[in-house]
Length: 448
Image 1 (cartoon, rainbow, N blue to C red):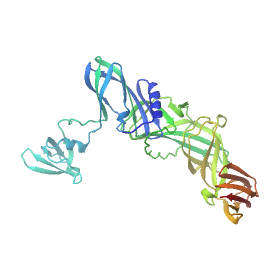
Image 2: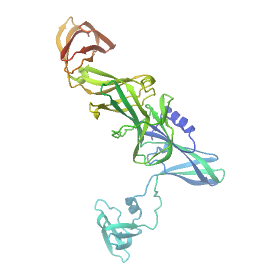
Image 3: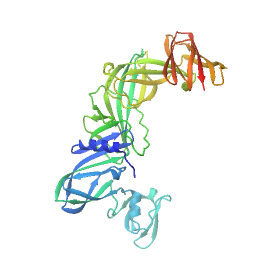
Image 4: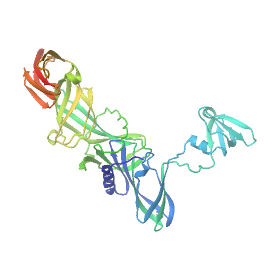
């Protein structure tokens, strides 16, 4: 049985309490969803059995919450033995069936074997007592069964033994957790020719493989990692290349517990085995800054290129951005667009910076070399380093040079001013002129 943390229970009960008649769906970006389904159901006075059909095939049956005025649930069963050709054959062994061939020939008799695979054959004792082997794929057009065998159902169903204080129609509220539902944010960024602005579109990508469809559902999305005792593997998001047209605001975003809640302002239908995309916010334009970074320990001798922008109202944004994949396009001189890279971003609060790594610079060469090492004492050593940057672009570029230092260290010499970013990281910021080389030398003293 899958255990749920207290925080997840709090979220589920809080969201369920706010729902109205119909289906409300709260999807987490962890292969998890809370379904709240409110229906009119018929009950008979006293003890009796009722069925709640069309639930998710991946339901966590231990998470079901049932509420109907004057009705007490005594027992619950989750039936998921669905009708299929193989199941019907298995259920009808030693019973009468009728087989119609592709040529119209009818065979009537008792089914003796139901194992159509791997031989792809079944054996029937005909009414005259003779045995007949039938090749399923080549010969059979239809199989007629008198009735649906007991125990087989067409859709996953919750079957309850209940005790009702009266007969008649009552409103039943049922909530449960299920896997097979997940959402992710997908962003499309189009850079202008000067790399100073970007058109930004955001999409919510919903994947439904839960085994159920949700008609005209009230959709809510939770951004943030909800703690669970057992994690599930998430499916890969769908590739998406098209840009969004300008549209009205579809989602209302608000802080919720320690997460962010996005509420779709209209009902939507999410079919089983469907990937649906909904615009998260209207297309907007944001100012960006192009950044070149040389981090030799993580990217060898390549200079990374990234775009940075403020997630603020003044910059055309200003809502908490859920984590997701960003695909970046660039406008070219002839007015066309080209794909230049992609990256993933984390959940980003309002008024924070977002950095999207695009790729590596083609026209900037970089080297990092160790020049000398000196032993000062048994515990102290000094290392001389040199960084070379060569800019073959037509314009000057600003480059951030990064180094990661470990242990007890200090910089005893530097040809360029540096900034200590953290206990293990320093940065040099230099400008490389066209067709010129920039040299940085520095000495690190370490104590063991």
